[in-house]
Length: 296
Image (spheres, helix red, strand yellow):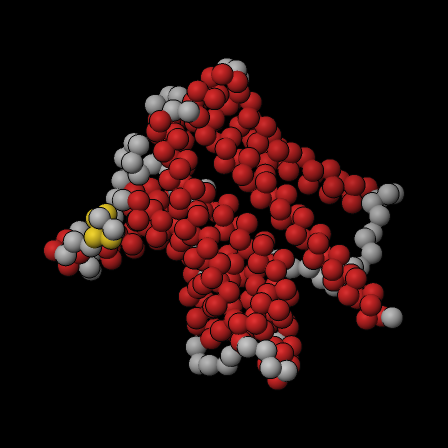
């Protein structure tokens, strides 16, 4: 999240035909490519009435798909939140060989197709993968549950976590780098423990970027399709997420059902956008107030 402390004045478009044309073109493209498809999702989801819409959402396979998608997100978000903060802290606060390489590796899922991530995962944990033969010979049982790494719920959770790994990290790292270590060192010199320093000094400084990163991670994990399609097996009622359920409903010519599930994902995306806007405004206001105090 990039928010500048100094707000430069915006130029007026009044009396400038080219500027007006740019605004009209940008607004028209936004309406055509973004707003219109969003409206279409809800229109086609509700075109047969509210009762039919709710009936599609109450379908047993759809309920399971929603539950499984939320499960993957509720695991991926806290894992990547902790990982993102720890990785950003390590890279921002300490100097060691390979810092840039480590940053590039963490951000790698952003530049690789999720399908490639899923295939790479299979080549490591699948039956023909590097660890596949060993895993097939050794049963991993946790709390009475046989842990399988492919075509299973754990596989969906793992690849979702991998795909969404960079988001919190990318949001909090620039702030930590900008703030440096002076405040933390001052707190430690005054007798604060490392944990208390983090809670009282570091965390308040990154909280809005952290909230933003968490919201992006949550939305991205809910909408993941490519890697999940590769490793899940797409078994109806067992390893189907919401995105896979939408795909299967379209294949079954159940367009209303597909749009009903899609409306859930769209609603979550809209809520995430509102959270993003709120966070950015709060951060911009905080920076503006800080600039005003410094000028005094």
